[in-house]
Length: 300
Image (cartoon, rainbow, N blue to C red; front, side):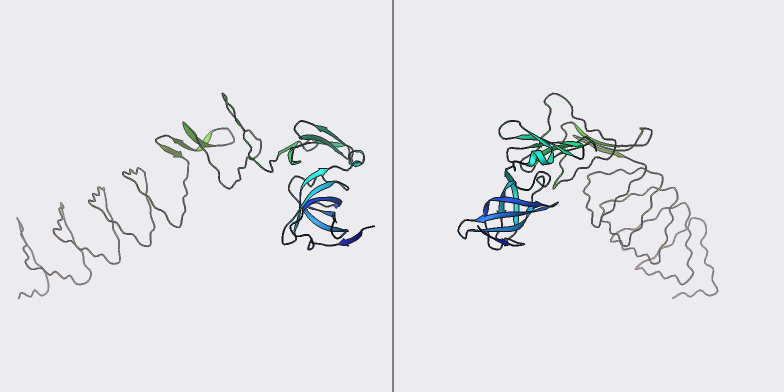
Protein backbone atom coordinates (compact mmCIF):
# COMPACT_ATOMS: atom_id res chain seq x y z
CA UNK A 1 0.00 0.00 0.00
CA UNK A 2 1.35 3.40 -0.97
CA UNK A 3 2.34 5.88 1.69
CA UNK A 4 0.28 9.11 1.77
CA UNK A 5 1.95 12.49 2.23
CA UNK A 6 -0.23 15.53 3.04
CA UNK A 7 1.03 18.86 1.73
CA UNK A 8 -0.55 22.30 1.49
CA UNK A 9 1.66 23.08 -1.51
CA UNK A 10 3.17 20.74 -4.07
CA UNK A 11 6.77 21.42 -3.06
CA UNK A 12 7.86 17.95 -4.24
CA UNK A 13 6.14 18.24 -7.64
CA UNK A 14 7.45 21.41 -9.32
CA UNK A 15 6.62 21.50 -13.02
CA UNK A 16 4.33 18.45 -12.82
CA UNK A 17 1.68 18.20 -15.55
CA UNK A 18 -0.48 15.12 -15.39
CA UNK A 19 -3.49 13.39 -13.88
CA UNK A 20 -4.75 13.65 -10.32
CA UNK A 21 -7.82 12.52 -8.41
CA UNK A 22 -10.19 14.83 -6.54
CA UNK A 23 -10.44 14.07 -2.84
CA UNK A 24 -12.67 16.99 -1.84
CA UNK A 25 -13.95 20.20 -3.47
CA UNK A 26 -14.33 23.67 -2.02
CA UNK A 27 -15.48 26.85 -3.75
CA UNK A 28 -12.25 27.87 -5.51
CA UNK A 29 -9.90 24.98 -4.76
CA UNK A 30 -9.89 21.20 -4.46
CA UNK A 31 -7.89 18.64 -2.52
CA UNK A 32 -6.22 16.36 -5.07
CA UNK A 33 -4.17 13.18 -4.73
CA UNK A 34 -1.30 12.46 -7.11
CA UNK A 35 0.65 9.19 -7.37
CA UNK A 36 4.41 9.65 -7.71
CA UNK A 37 5.57 6.75 -9.81
CA UNK A 38 9.26 7.06 -8.97
CA UNK A 39 8.80 7.42 -5.20
CA UNK A 40 5.80 5.10 -5.05
CA UNK A 41 3.92 7.48 -2.75
CA UNK A 42 0.65 9.35 -3.02
CA UNK A 43 0.85 13.09 -2.49
CA UNK A 44 -2.24 15.08 -1.51
CA UNK A 45 -2.21 18.79 -2.22
CA UNK A 46 -4.49 21.79 -2.58
CA UNK A 47 -5.02 22.95 -6.16
CA UNK A 48 -6.72 26.07 -7.45
CA UNK A 49 -9.59 25.54 -9.87
CA UNK A 50 -9.63 27.55 -13.09
CA UNK A 51 -12.75 29.59 -13.75
CA UNK A 52 -15.72 27.56 -14.97
CA UNK A 53 -14.72 24.18 -13.49
CA UNK A 54 -15.64 24.69 -9.83
CA UNK A 55 -19.28 23.65 -10.36
CA UNK A 56 -18.35 20.54 -12.39
CA UNK A 57 -15.85 18.82 -10.10
CA UNK A 58 -16.83 15.99 -7.77
CA UNK A 59 -15.04 13.59 -5.51
CA UNK A 60 -13.32 10.86 -7.51
CA UNK A 61 -13.00 12.83 -10.78
CA UNK A 62 -9.75 12.44 -12.68
CA UNK A 63 -8.43 15.93 -13.44
CA UNK A 64 -5.53 17.45 -15.32
CA UNK A 65 -3.12 18.98 -12.81
CA UNK A 66 -0.56 21.67 -13.61
CA UNK A 67 2.01 22.54 -10.91
CA UNK A 68 4.13 25.66 -11.39
CA UNK A 69 7.78 25.93 -10.42
CA UNK A 70 6.89 27.85 -7.25
CA UNK A 71 4.68 24.98 -6.07
CA UNK A 72 1.24 26.42 -6.86
CA UNK A 73 -1.07 23.77 -8.33
CA UNK A 74 -3.91 24.39 -10.79
CA UNK A 75 -6.71 22.17 -12.09
CA UNK A 76 -7.04 23.01 -15.78
CA UNK A 77 -9.42 20.32 -16.99
CA UNK A 78 -11.37 17.14 -16.28
CA UNK A 79 -10.01 13.89 -17.76
CA UNK A 80 -12.71 11.53 -16.50
CA UNK A 81 -15.87 11.86 -14.42
CA UNK A 82 -16.35 9.57 -11.44
CA UNK A 83 -18.74 6.71 -12.15
CA UNK A 84 -21.03 7.46 -9.21
CA UNK A 85 -21.29 11.19 -9.86
CA UNK A 86 -24.37 11.09 -12.03
CA UNK A 87 -26.28 8.93 -9.58
CA UNK A 88 -25.37 10.77 -6.36
CA UNK A 89 -25.69 14.28 -7.72
CA UNK A 90 -28.77 13.61 -9.83
CA UNK A 91 -27.10 14.70 -13.08
CA UNK A 92 -27.88 13.79 -16.65
CA UNK A 93 -25.08 14.16 -19.17
CA UNK A 94 -25.29 13.99 -22.95
CA UNK A 95 -22.71 14.22 -25.68
CA UNK A 96 -23.06 16.80 -28.43
CA UNK A 97 -20.26 16.28 -30.99
CA UNK A 98 -16.47 16.47 -31.31
CA UNK A 99 -16.06 15.94 -27.59
CA UNK A 100 -18.46 18.69 -26.50
CA UNK A 101 -21.09 17.73 -23.97
CA UNK A 102 -24.06 19.06 -22.09
CA UNK A 103 -25.21 18.38 -18.58
CA UNK A 104 -28.37 18.80 -16.53
CA UNK A 105 -27.46 19.39 -12.89
CA UNK A 106 -30.25 18.82 -10.39
CA UNK A 107 -29.84 20.33 -6.93
CA UNK A 108 -32.66 20.76 -4.39
CA UNK A 109 -35.24 20.05 -7.06
CA UNK A 110 -33.87 22.67 -9.44
CA UNK A 111 -32.23 21.87 -12.78
CA UNK A 112 -29.37 23.86 -14.31
CA UNK A 113 -28.30 23.38 -17.93
CA UNK A 114 -24.56 23.47 -18.66
CA UNK A 115 -22.67 23.11 -21.93
CA UNK A 116 -18.97 22.22 -22.03
CA UNK A 117 -16.41 22.52 -24.84
CA UNK A 118 -14.26 19.58 -26.05
CA UNK A 119 -11.59 20.91 -23.63
CA UNK A 120 -14.13 20.52 -20.81
CA UNK A 121 -14.51 24.30 -20.43
CA UNK A 122 -17.87 25.62 -19.26
CA UNK A 123 -19.16 27.86 -22.08
CA UNK A 124 -22.88 28.18 -21.29
CA UNK A 125 -25.01 27.89 -18.18
CA UNK A 126 -28.72 28.55 -17.64
CA UNK A 127 -30.50 28.50 -14.29
CA UNK A 128 -34.31 28.61 -14.74
CA UNK A 129 -34.83 29.22 -11.03
CA UNK A 130 -33.01 32.57 -11.12
CA UNK A 131 -33.57 33.06 -14.89
CA UNK A 132 -29.87 33.82 -15.27
CA UNK A 133 -27.97 32.79 -18.40
CA UNK A 134 -24.19 32.96 -18.63
CA UNK A 135 -21.91 32.59 -21.66
CA UNK A 136 -18.26 32.00 -20.79
CA UNK A 137 -15.34 31.47 -23.17
CA UNK A 138 -12.22 30.29 -21.36
CA UNK A 139 -9.98 30.46 -24.45
CA UNK A 140 -10.54 31.82 -27.94
CA UNK A 141 -12.81 34.58 -29.18
CA UNK A 142 -16.56 35.13 -28.98
CA UNK A 143 -18.17 36.63 -32.09
CA UNK A 144 -21.79 37.63 -32.59
CA UNK A 145 -22.55 38.61 -36.17
CA UNK A 146 -25.22 38.89 -38.80
CA UNK A 147 -24.67 39.05 -42.55
CA UNK A 148 -27.78 40.92 -43.65
CA UNK A 149 -29.53 42.17 -40.54
CA UNK A 150 -29.32 44.15 -37.33
CA UNK A 151 -28.15 43.25 -33.83
CA UNK A 152 -30.04 44.65 -30.86
CA UNK A 153 -29.16 44.38 -27.18
CA UNK A 154 -32.05 45.24 -24.90
CA UNK A 155 -32.12 45.08 -21.11
CA UNK A 156 -34.51 46.29 -18.47
CA UNK A 157 -31.50 46.96 -16.24
CA UNK A 158 -27.99 48.11 -17.05
CA UNK A 159 -25.68 47.00 -19.87
CA UNK A 160 -21.99 46.97 -18.96
CA UNK A 161 -18.99 46.67 -21.28
CA UNK A 162 -15.73 45.78 -19.55
CA UNK A 163 -12.53 44.88 -21.32
CA UNK A 164 -8.89 45.71 -21.85
CA UNK A 165 -9.99 47.98 -24.72
CA UNK A 166 -13.44 48.86 -26.05
CA UNK A 167 -13.57 49.69 -29.76
CA UNK A 168 -16.75 51.09 -31.35
CA UNK A 169 -16.81 51.39 -35.12
CA UNK A 170 -19.52 52.57 -37.48
CA UNK A 171 -19.30 52.83 -41.26
CA UNK A 172 -21.87 55.62 -41.31
CA UNK A 173 -22.13 56.99 -37.77
CA UNK A 174 -21.87 56.26 -34.05
CA UNK A 175 -24.61 57.73 -31.86
CA UNK A 176 -25.16 57.82 -28.09
CA UNK A 177 -28.50 58.92 -26.63
CA UNK A 178 -29.80 59.30 -23.08
CA UNK A 179 -33.57 59.40 -22.57
CA UNK A 180 -35.72 60.55 -19.69
CA UNK A 181 -38.57 58.61 -18.08
CA UNK A 182 -40.94 59.66 -20.89
CA UNK A 183 -38.60 58.44 -23.63
CA UNK A 184 -37.50 61.91 -24.71
CA UNK A 185 -33.84 62.28 -25.67
CA UNK A 186 -32.17 64.67 -23.22
CA UNK A 187 -28.49 64.30 -24.10
CA UNK A 188 -26.91 62.91 -27.24
CA UNK A 189 -23.59 62.52 -29.02
CA UNK A 190 -23.48 61.91 -32.76
CA UNK A 191 -20.30 61.08 -34.70
CA UNK A 192 -20.44 60.81 -38.47
CA UNK A 193 -17.77 60.86 -41.17
CA UNK A 194 -17.15 64.63 -41.11
CA UNK A 195 -18.70 66.02 -37.96
CA UNK A 196 -19.13 65.41 -34.22
CA UNK A 197 -22.28 66.87 -32.71
CA UNK A 198 -23.33 66.90 -29.07
CA UNK A 199 -26.25 68.32 -27.11
CA UNK A 200 -27.01 68.46 -23.41
CA UNK A 201 -28.47 70.79 -20.81
CA UNK A 202 -25.07 70.98 -19.11
CA UNK A 203 -21.50 70.13 -20.18
CA UNK A 204 -18.78 69.41 -17.60
CA UNK A 205 -15.23 68.72 -18.84
CA UNK A 206 -12.37 68.40 -16.37
CA UNK A 207 -8.75 67.56 -17.08
CA UNK A 208 -5.36 68.29 -15.58
CA UNK A 209 -3.83 69.05 -18.98
CA UNK A 210 -5.70 69.83 -22.22
CA UNK A 211 -4.49 70.64 -25.72
CA UNK A 212 -6.73 72.00 -28.48
CA UNK A 213 -5.73 72.57 -32.08
CA UNK A 214 -8.56 74.24 -34.03
CA UNK A 215 -8.20 75.95 -37.39
CA UNK A 216 -11.34 78.03 -36.86
CA UNK A 217 -13.56 78.39 -33.80
CA UNK A 218 -16.88 80.22 -33.34
CA UNK A 219 -18.52 80.75 -29.95
CA UNK A 220 -22.10 81.95 -29.53
CA UNK A 221 -23.72 82.28 -26.13
CA UNK A 222 -25.52 84.56 -23.72
CA UNK A 223 -22.90 84.55 -20.99
CA UNK A 224 -19.24 83.65 -20.69
CA UNK A 225 -17.30 83.45 -17.43
CA UNK A 226 -13.73 82.29 -16.83
CA UNK A 227 -11.54 82.03 -13.75
CA UNK A 228 -7.88 81.60 -14.64
CA UNK A 229 -4.81 81.92 -12.43
CA UNK A 230 -2.55 82.84 -15.31
CA UNK A 231 -3.22 83.29 -19.02
CA UNK A 232 -1.05 84.09 -22.02
CA UNK A 233 -2.32 84.91 -25.51
CA UNK A 234 -0.19 85.12 -28.63
CA UNK A 235 -2.30 86.61 -31.41
CA UNK A 236 -1.54 87.93 -34.87
CA UNK A 237 -4.53 90.29 -34.79
CA UNK A 238 -7.17 90.87 -32.12
CA UNK A 239 -10.48 92.66 -32.71
CA UNK A 240 -12.95 93.23 -29.88
CA UNK A 241 -16.47 94.60 -30.49
CA UNK A 242 -18.50 95.27 -27.35
CA UNK A 243 -21.42 97.49 -26.34
CA UNK A 244 -19.87 98.20 -22.95
CA UNK A 245 -16.39 97.16 -21.84
CA UNK A 246 -15.51 97.23 -18.15
CA UNK A 247 -12.01 96.28 -17.03
CA UNK A 248 -10.73 96.05 -13.46
CA UNK A 249 -7.16 95.28 -12.50
CA UNK A 250 -4.69 95.92 -9.71
CA UNK A 251 -1.89 96.80 -12.13
CA UNK A 252 -1.99 97.25 -15.91
CA UNK A 253 1.11 97.42 -18.09
CA UNK A 254 0.97 98.18 -21.81
CA UNK A 255 4.02 97.85 -24.02
CA UNK A 256 3.52 98.99 -27.64
CA UNK A 257 6.45 98.85 -30.01
CA UNK A 258 5.11 101.25 -32.67
CA UNK A 259 1.76 103.07 -32.51
CA UNK A 260 -0.84 103.25 -29.75
CA UNK A 261 -3.99 105.10 -30.87
CA UNK A 262 -7.25 105.83 -29.08
CA UNK A 263 -10.26 107.21 -30.91
CA UNK A 264 -13.29 108.13 -28.81
CA UNK A 265 -16.28 110.47 -28.79
CA UNK A 266 -15.32 111.61 -25.32
CA UNK A 267 -12.41 110.78 -23.05
CA UNK A 268 -12.12 111.06 -19.31
CA UNK A 269 -9.21 109.99 -17.14
CA UNK A 270 -9.55 109.99 -13.35
CA UNK A 271 -6.42 109.46 -11.26
CA UNK A 272 -6.64 109.53 -7.47
CA UNK A 273 -2.87 109.85 -7.00
CA UNK A 274 -0.22 111.41 -9.17
CA UNK A 275 -0.16 111.38 -12.96
CA UNK A 276 3.17 111.14 -14.70
CA UNK A 277 3.67 111.66 -18.43
CA UNK A 278 7.08 111.39 -20.07
CA UNK A 279 7.74 111.73 -23.80
CA UNK A 280 10.35 113.00 -26.20
CA UNK A 281 7.78 115.37 -27.74
CA UNK A 282 4.32 116.30 -26.53
CA UNK A 283 1.69 118.16 -28.51
CA UNK A 284 -1.79 119.11 -27.30
CA UNK A 285 -4.25 120.55 -29.80
CA UNK A 286 -7.82 121.68 -29.17
CA UNK A 287 -10.18 123.08 -31.80
CA UNK A 288 -12.20 125.10 -29.26
CA UNK A 289 -10.59 125.73 -25.90
CA UNK A 290 -7.83 124.31 -23.73
CA UNK A 291 -8.06 124.74 -19.96
CA UNK A 292 -5.52 124.03 -17.26
CA UNK A 293 -6.78 124.31 -13.68
CA UNK A 294 -4.70 123.75 -10.56
CA UNK A 295 -3.58 125.44 -7.34
CA UNK A 296 -0.08 125.69 -8.68
CA UNK A 297 1.18 125.30 -12.23
CA UNK A 298 4.92 124.98 -12.74
CA UNK A 299 6.42 125.51 -16.17
CA UNK A 300 10.05 124.60 -16.84
